[in-house]
Amino acid sequence: MAGLVVVIDIGKTHSKASLWTPDGHELARTRYSNRHVEANGYPCLDIDGIEVWLRASLSDFARMGTVSAIIPIAHGAACAVVRGRELVAAPMDYEAELPADILHAYREQRDAFSETGSPSMDRWLNLGAQLHTLEARIPDLLAGDAVIVPWPQYWAWRLTGVAVSEVTSLGAHTDLWSPIRKAPSPMAVRRGWAQRLAPFCHAGDVVGTLLPEWSAATGLPAETRVHAGLHDSNAALLAARMYPEIRDRDAAIVSTGTWFVTMRPIREEQTELAALGQGGVVNVDVNGLPVPTLIFMGGREVEILCGEGIRIDDPQYEDGIMAALPGCVSKGTMILPTFVPGTGPFAGASGAWLNPPQNPIERAAAVALYVGLLTDFALARVGARGTIMIDGRFARAKAFVSVLACLRADHHIYAARQEADLALGAMSLLSPTLSVQGSLELIKPDPLDLSGYRTRWLEASGEKG
Image (cartoon, rainbow, N blue to C red; front, side, top):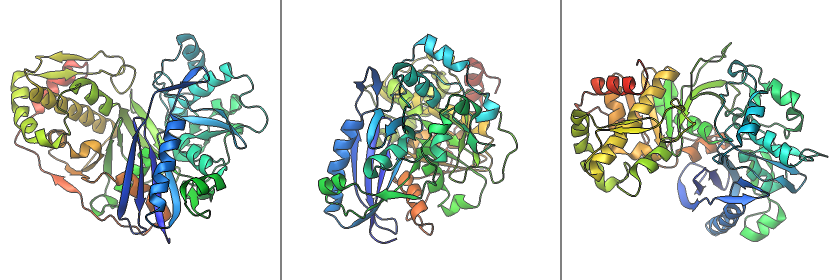
């Protein structure tokens, strides 16, 4: 692979673009805070704002060297409907409220979890619910040659004018994919959505080259190749497999950000989907294999619980937060799930504080304990064994990773201290021999016994443990 590579990472809260050498050295990075937008009568994702930022970022990158490839990453709870070069329906914002009657009508048509590995989720988190709603609002939504394009591939389409689909994006709690059949779900076929999915390709395949408008606006070469791209959690999974500590082990991966995504890759085909319970999802990797997963909005909960106070990943307070952990445990300061209703393994519960903290440092310590307990619970659900890797934003939150190491003292807990893990995972599709430049940090558990605290938390949360 010759020339520089741009990785576009479109998250729910933030969008990021990074520039890389072919051997995995990061040269530059930009970031954009996504806005809340309403268009065509419904809340949708910030495609216009992201596009303005992306054009500026690509222009900056073009001045740093010759870019030969671009690959997008994005979350799995959005899609666009396009017709040729026309955008028919912008991607919906999955956090918006879905009218109860529409949601009820849609849920009556869903396939069983054993078919799709996709749970019934709140709001518009199931992609099928978005298509159901859009068809009700736009009667001719799929008329003519209109096709459905998943969110990562929307950006490949926007850059090249070529529409494609890809399995990691459709296998992310969409209700549209059957992991065992490796085909669209029966509901997707019944509703006619399967027939309208853009043509399939592999995440690493080249979709096309830059449209003239993008080349002219950014200064990038017209021959810059754009790859199909993939679901962000699967990019994290690919990145984890690049580390020697993880590559040949039965390792569980915890990808942290707005969502905490706990995955345990399997090495052979499964004949049936795992019984993961509430919050469980069966994702699909780039090779089409099922990946037992449990998800919850850990980053959003941290934002809510910390408010304007001290964040658990703020390095200037990490020693103080660490020092406050034993006091929180001894006082029984505890957070019960959940403060993001309708998502995760405790979706039906209402969050509460027990023995609230006295100051912002103690509050941050209690939040670190809480997300550590939630992550430990998720790891148990996916059947984590000897090795666990944490990546993403909260891999650098010392108190959180220390709590998890205490809860899992019989495991090897590794933390990725660099922010670039998703990008490296995507780049590995373009350059299979790419190696990780940094190393993982082995987290040693502090002498803090959390077994009793965990038991009390599980009981108070309505779980037997």
